[in-house]
Each structure stands twice: as C-alpha cells, then as structure tokens.
Length: 73
Image 1 (cartoon, rainbow, N blue to C red):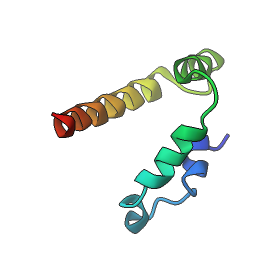
Image 2: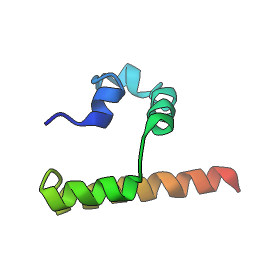
Image 3: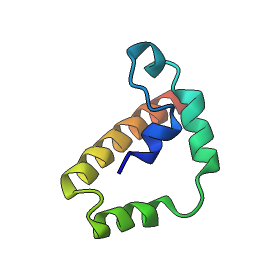
Image 4: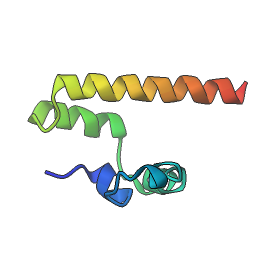
C-alpha cells in the first residue's frame, strides 16, 4: 500500500521539491480527519506499520517539534 502522506505531497522525492514541502504538508494536516494517534495505533495493530517504522517516525516528529520550539522561543 502506498504511503498516503507521500501521495498527498505529490508522490515525488526530488530534492528541489523537498525544500517547498511545507505548504503541502500544512494543507495535508488541515484536511486530515480524525485522531492522528488513533490512526497511527491502528496502523501498528494491523501490521501496516512496523514498530521500527513507528520508532523512526516518532524520532523524526520529536526532532521537528524540538526545532519548532526553538524557533518559537
């Protein structure tokens, strides 16, 4: 199954496009329906996402949150 976030962001990984991913990410976040924690837990429970993938995702999310907090101070 394809990654829905990757598809929502255009399905491209070219470096030139990665720099301008923020507007598309914000749009994806605004259009997201439901509880993201429940959606993630559902992926873990169904086997669609492995514990290793979850750990990687959590690490990236924590890194982004730290950087955002540094900007907001």
